[in-house]
Length: 497
Image (tube, rainbow, N blue to C red; front, side, top):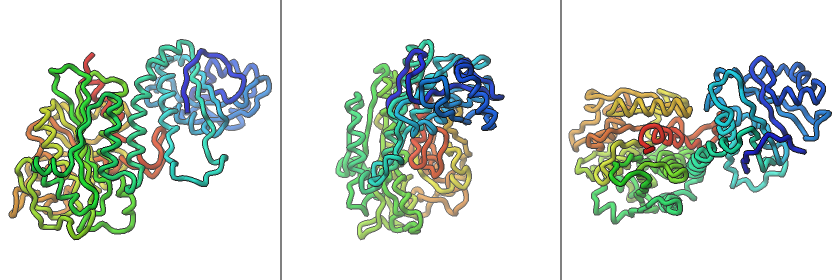
């Protein structure tokens, strides 16, 4: 679907969407159309009990006195509550109704009296919300009828000052490209996306100016990455480590680094998971998917920052060569780990990836993302990602970015008492706590042993990387969670001006 910006001219056909504020207060364009239709819009609102609350929509078909096919009333809520996320939700509501209502739609963006946002900003975020909502992952549906497919091919955002809105939308569109790449990667089945093919997808980012290296098992073995390699040794698929570098900042500036867990399918290994729901374990590479999508977003909008993206890619399978409970592996850091449970594998992958990242690149901050523990879903549900950190300032920046983008994080505690729970009689540490208590926290304590004092944050996204219900700008399936959050973090705090 194409999104265009234009001067406010009524089209000759298609759908025209107009603003209505809370309390059934027609915006300027809606008032004009109401007069042209002899009050048809006002009567429709009364009949449909339409109040103009945010998210409400109402269609008036073939209104007399107008050439186009339908008028769509868009509830935008209270003017004082209009912000970026609210404008995006308005665009989402528009797309939800317009997607199958003809080939063309035009949304008329008026100045909203009482709103803190300028018209161009509102227009850019309405377009952004519509774009995010338009995403579909249906490539494997072969029997959909034409009536089941979306029809909308072009959305025009019409306003005075369209050039300013177009300029504001340009970087948002590039962020959406990154979100869509993450959604695609997470949604693909494990016979399509596995370590080698995910590495190939990352390689494709070279066309945007990102430097991409792919390390195979022989190279990782030379580096001493016994923790990561142990996870993938039961699979016929070769494990990979992908290193992506975007050099958009000054040469002397230390990079910001992002590290992603990329278990492209997680059976649990010898500690086999139950069969029910195991098909969902294709999304256990959600952290890696976010890092790849984020790098695409940063490069796409030419962010003025030096950024590193590292993803450890493995498939955790049971076989005659698989890692066993009780095995001891030596990580790249030299620290040894007793593997108590082979289904606590993501932290083993991240242990070597984090150490490699801080050792080679000396980042100013390092953030990892992982669908790491079911315990975080028990604690936070699917609303927030768990945040663990050794740095208060970084935590506050992440929380602010989460609030601004609607991708919320909730900080949980860490400390010596939790750290002692992964001490081990056989090795330097074990890969799970001494009991089930604080499972997400002990996982974070494990990771902290490999960050070497770098300001670091761990985001446990097990509850947010995949969704079974639709949200305003997020479909069912792979959510792309974290791309918008981390792009905002970079833009607000680490990007040169």
